[in-house]
Structures are given as structure tokens and as C-alpha cells.
Length: 467
Image 1: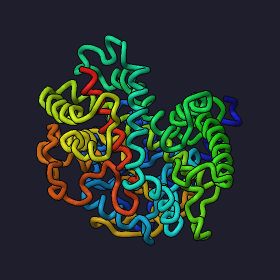
Image 2: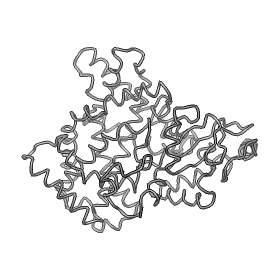
Image 3: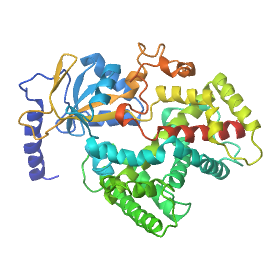
Image 4: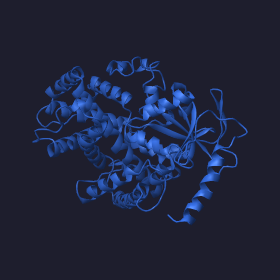
């Protein structure tokens, strides 16, 4: 790098750092903004990759208290946690104080019209279209098809192999778990999603999509520096190619609907195209459909695979839980004839299995949490949280909440490090805004019921066909 470039960067970074660290007319909470521009982004990303985010956040709480300022992805950020913080964030998100907004890298890759980026009437309209496909009465129709996808996956990748999981699985490190087990689960959840959500059959198009999706996911949470050879740059290119592929699917689905050779609820894309046929004011544009298909693709592929991976890991560690799940699933298997598919009623009987899944989600939430944009100064717990810094080129402050910090709070979940599925025997025993693996409020994950079905069907065949 020559002297001119270095000097130009110096002239840019130093004023920016001074602007970010300058005192404002209202004192902000304690904390550190870290290095100029990058803030704590690098150590935060390192903690995410090594599964130590909880420890990283605990250290901040130890140093600065329950509320602290930091800087992530070139944006000043405030970290809040706890039941009160969750309630505040979930109930004010679409008001005049907070608005949903993800980090710049996520926003640029997933699109500006993604449901997580929208607010007010736009959010309600797009969410309504997505929920119309993912509501339980619709999902009941797809249990059989999901069952077939799970069986197909097991026949292709599991049957005939003496070892799918390795001996001593209990002692696998997080990195080994991720490298050896996660790919199988990601393959499974991708194929389920491709078949049920997007209607893409097995073949070249699906193979191309999974490769592009992996490239896109690799740069999803990264420094938003769009330079050649950076992870973010590769992710943006993959996102553009996926968007082209999705728009081709939209054109095909629209033509099929016009020719009356497809039903409106065949898959998520046809459902979104059909939504609002009787009310043009709620119709979704092709850009909105593409952005939200990408959003569903990321959430459906990544979160369920994490849940199932950690759930299987626990079955290898805890003989009692393993035996109880196996007993419950064996009772259901006895009622089925050879080759008979699972039904919605069968899933309703898997109560203990789902309690184990929820406890797995409590201890290993697939998503760190979420971000909110501050659009108006507000007071919280004695601190003033402003919408931004005066004389600063960054207009808005972000608020971040973390599910893991609430889930491991011993005031809410006694002995939080102990794996105990009985915590969820009575849903009413868990205080509101404390179990937030699927978020909460008006923005609770619309795919939570789909994740439940996907997990239960998968676990059924894993424990009834393998040891």
C-alpha cells in the first residue's frame, strides 16, 4: 500500500474516531467504542466463530454493567439484556423509538425489502403473506412430504454406513462438531426447505443453489467492506446470483398460476404471488418476494440445522434423555405400518421430544439475537440512549439484545447450566420474554412451527432407525 493511500486512510479514520468518541450533550452509558471504524467487530466475530459469544458478553457486563456501549460493523451500538430489555425491545420495535435493522452486511446481502428490515404497515403486509403459508393449518398438509424428504436423506447419507457419528462423540470440540455433524444436518434442512418452501426438485438447479447459499452465508456477518477477494464481496456476488435464480422461479410460478396448472399454496413463492389477489393494496412486488425468499432460505437452512445438531449431540451425552425420547418415538412407530408416513397427530404426541428440543434451544440458541435502530432518544434504566452522535457521519445508534444472556440467567432458569427438559412441562411456568429462541412480540419468527415439525420428524427417524 503506497504512502498516498495510507495518508488518505489516516485522514478519514482519525476524524471519524474523534467524532464517534466525542462527548455529546447527553451522557451515554459506560463502555468502549474500540478501534476506529472496526470497533469490536473482529473480536465479536472471533467469539461467534468459536462459540464463545456468551463469555464475551459476560465480560462486558462484568466491566461495564448490564448496559454498555460498543461499536460493531462500523456502527455505534448499545448492548441490553434481560427480561426487561427483551420486553422493551419486542414491544417498542414498530413504534416511534426503535425500528428493526440488521447490521449493514446482513442488510446488503438480504435486501432492503426483507421482512426483518420493514416496519409498520409494510411489515404487517409482508409478514401476513409469509404467515399465510407457514401457519399450522397449512403446514398440516406438508408433514407427509417432509417425512419423505427425511427418509430420502437417511437413505442417501446414513443407511449402509457403519459410522455416521464418531465414537467418543461426547468429547468432540465445538469445531469438530461443526465440521463432522453440521454438514449432514445442513444438507437435510436445505433439501427440506428446497422441496417444501420453494418447490425446487432435486437436480442441477438445487445443486447450484446450495453452493451459492454457502458462499452467501459465509459473509453474512462480516465487515461490510466490498473489496475484491473479501468474504463480504464473495457473499454479495453469490446473493446476486441467487436473486437471479429466484426471479426466474417467480416468473415460472406466475406463468403456472395464470395457466391454472399450479395451486396458490403449492410453495412459499406461489403463496406470496397469490397473496392479495382480492386486495391489490397488499400485493408483493417481485423484489419483495426475492428478498423474503432469501431471508427464509437463510433462517430455514441455518437455524434448524443448528438445533438438530446440538440435540443429537445431547442424545449422545445423556443416556436418560436418549432413552426417554427413544421410548416415546418407539410407541409412535408401533402404530405405523411399514412405509406409512407420519401425520400431524403423531407429532402432537411427541411432547417429551419437543421439550428436549426447547431445552436445547435454551442452552444453544441458533441465533445470537437481533439488532434495532434507535430513531428517537429514550431513557432506559437511568441511562439516556440517543439516536446518534452529534456531528457524526453515522446517523443512528443500534441496540443489540442477546438470547443466550436471558436463557442462562439463574434468576429466570434455576441452575441454568443443567440440561432439564422439565422446565417446559408447563409453558405458563416460563415468564414472558424469557425464552426468546424464536424472538418475541410482533416479530416472533413466523417459521417456528415449521422448525418444530422439521425437528420432530427428523428425530423420530434418527432414534428409531439408528443408535
